[in-house]
Each structure stands twice: as C-alpha cells, then as structure tokens.
Image (cartoon, rainbow, N blue to C red):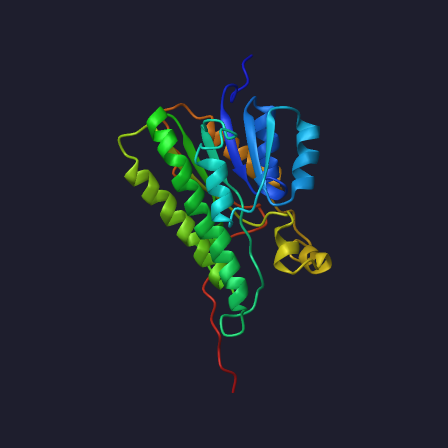
Length: 256
C-alpha cells in the first residue's frame, strides 16, 4: 500500500520540539521528505540521524529574515520544491495581566507567531501557485477564539493566525492551493516550560489532574488535513482534550 504522503515534500518550522517535531516524525512515517527548520542545530542533526535521509535539516531562526530568505527563495538550491508548509514555530511567554506584562515578551511573541509565519508563507506560496499544488498549515490555538486571563497578546497573535489563514484562502480562490488553521487546546509539550522561563515544575502544574493533548495528537490531525482529497480544504479545525472546554462568562462581584 502506498504511503499517503509519498512523493510529497513538507517544510516544518519549529521542528526540533513539540508539535513541529511530531509533524516531522509523522510526515516521514507517511512517506514524505521533510525540510526541518529550527534554531537548535544539535537537535536537528540528531533528528536526521534518527529519521534518515528524508529528513533535511535547516538550522535557522525563523525570525531571521535574511536567513529565511536564503533558505526559501530558491537561490541556494538547497530547498526542494515544497508541497506542504507547516508553520509550527510559535511561543507563549508569561501569564501576567496587560498592565504588568513584559513588552519584550510581547515583541517576541508577535515576531515569532505573526511576522515569521507571514514571511515564510509569502516566500513559499508563489512556488506552490506556479506548480498548481500546495498546502499551507498554520498551527493556531483555541486561545485565538477563547480569551483567558494572562493570555492577552498570545491569544491576539493566534487570532491573527486564524484571520490570516482565512484571508490566504480567500486570495487563493481559483488555485488548487489549500490552507488550514489547526487550533489545539491544552497540549503538553515544551510550550509551557518556555512560557514559564524554564520552570518545569510550574509548567507541569498546568496539566495537573487532567490528561492534555500530546504533540502526536495534533500531528495526527495535521496529517489527516493534508491527506484529504485534492478538492477538499479544511479551513479551520479545533481540538481540545476531553477535560477542557471553553469557559462561561466571568463575573467579578463586589463584596460588602
């Protein structure tokens, strides 16, 4: 039986950990060649050793516009023509309310979650349109729909990802290029450890007493989306662990 992604080439950002890593692993399993982009060269080297020659490591920072341009504009010849782009690189930093939050943290989230995603997409799309084949998958979040205390700018970046994804699809009407925004809920990866500046004990408390999604659960959904028949576009797909739900209205009551 032919592997579902045999003959496809996917670029996955944030491929050294979390959802990006799980997507790279799943795509290789499904027969694709994967161009894996991440900052940590040692992790990418180890990943290439583990997954074999169809894993092509590209160590670079997605917020480094010049490095991304060199990798993606086709001039170097290193990046093969792409059928799939998974924008999985992203981060959440801090849980402080707006009036106490770090502006530097805000800048880093906007730079990674919005600017880098937009730039990579802009570089990859012309080739997909010209070849008449391609799929952009953005990793959003339920935080882009359901706000929560301390999620201010992170949630806003993911709302941006949702709207940008829909806008791309609108612009691409008349082409066969597909666009999907995958929006996970609570997912136990390095995400929370980064949010709490490496404090793993604090990160673990986020998932205490419940079973969150794992990165492989999200990668399974991504793999399903990209393997639909060519005439099917999954616009937006939202997934949560069973023990999570969107909240009711919050009301603060004055006490006499």
